[in-house]
Length: 222
Image (cartoon, rainbow, N blue to C red; front, side):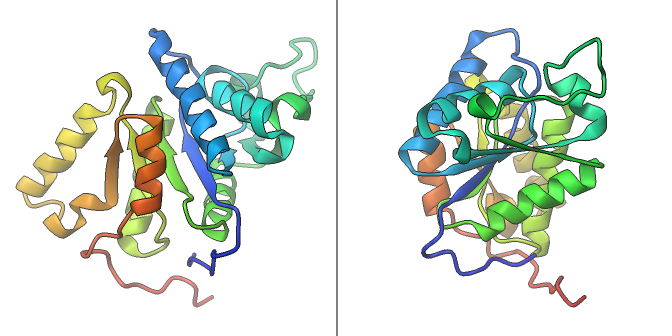
């Protein structure tokens, strides 16, 4: 995956976040705040396609401001019943209201979901990138994957952690310790950027500088 000329394209942000709302309302408030900032910056959202938890909140809020065309949810078929409100009498029914959540694409597996989300970000305009709100194992896994992809030169898009109420502080400290312990080069410490507010997320996306220690590898030979 390589970054194309994005000078005249609308930016796309991929948001990783939980299918849970968390125990504190501050996480839902942050999701709404992020959606409002995306709207203010004419940015489209691609995300995991859930209608519940933080996933649903950020999608719903952005659609309510910018319309259904501003959001694309991509969800693997096995997760529909877990990450979307569905008809319990028909587990095969898929009926998201696009007027509320935007466009939804159902795919076969996690790999397809992640590849499609990354491609939309890479093909979008300047100011796009990957942003992690609060979430669980899946959110952390997706965040670490796109961070690794940046390090390996698979993409050159920003990777931002929206650290709501200290949620990601442990991860930020782990990065510092990994640098100190010699497992992450100091020249790669800045691949993952911390933001403490939605406004700071937007600023970090626009001002992001790729780390000097990234590998200059070629991945599009086939």
